[in-house]
Length: 385
Image 1 (cartoon, rainbow, N blue to C red):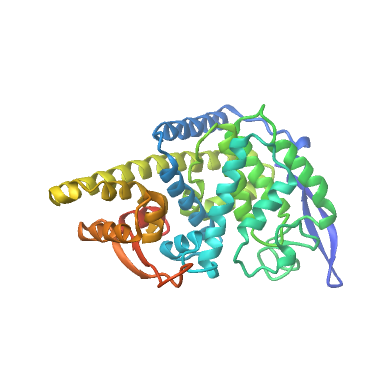
Image 2: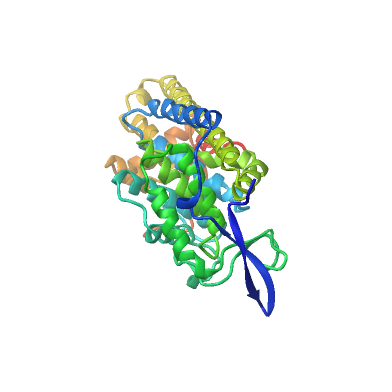
């Protein structure tokens, strides 16, 4: 098995070492054998099956799925925060987002941005990758000069420098040609979709075009590709499957670099299939929880059963996860007083929990926060609990 690339000499702080430059995808024989093609096809079928479970009112479920993907992708890189803090950062309910929660929320925003552009049918460009990176790194400690721009310094993976790194990534002078080649491959429509996502992601990780955040941008690329090529409303949370087997993920990427693209594609296809199953499970669990809520409300007596605002609020919970009287008032076009009363009724019914106070809101006193513990558990589901 021949490595899919070559080593070039670089100088780092006056010392010589070697960097790995991958073979251009246009120059690689990336054919699939029968076994690999079958695994890839099975993964696409699993994702299609999951997509069929999305009903016309898919937006709340899509938000939960994208949040699950964003949380898992950040977790793989060692970035984590309580899900309720992530939601507060997304909604900016506690002021401008900061810290780990803001970083995870940025991951969700980047995935959402990618999915929207995939549906729009616009081809991928290097500038698109830079836009995702800029969105992703919101709230991160990365210096601004590295955010949303291709690196102009030497990069590496693992270790403290290129001298002891696990992998020394291509020198800056090689990035332009490598990225042009990657983008050309990503925009193709004549190759197997799941294999294309696997290959594109692995090549992106080797190129490592940014100073930080490459793993997460690479997984955003997966979401973009699967959404585009499989005509999805929302991509499966593949990062949830990757987070459950980080060692297998890392090994697969090494195999791809060593020239074994088929083993990597098979592993990746299984992760995509697992993401499809996770999507179906989440949809089923949300429907079960919502039915349990309706049963609770029906059992609360005629007055509560006749309160249309209470039932309307239930449909907002999966979309927002954290509700305030302002959010509910705006969404249902009712007064703040009526919205707060509705939220308290849902607390009394055992559906919501009053979380505490937001740091601030645009005017008046800090808003009380109301959350569904059941849905928060799904949004940060295994292996992240």
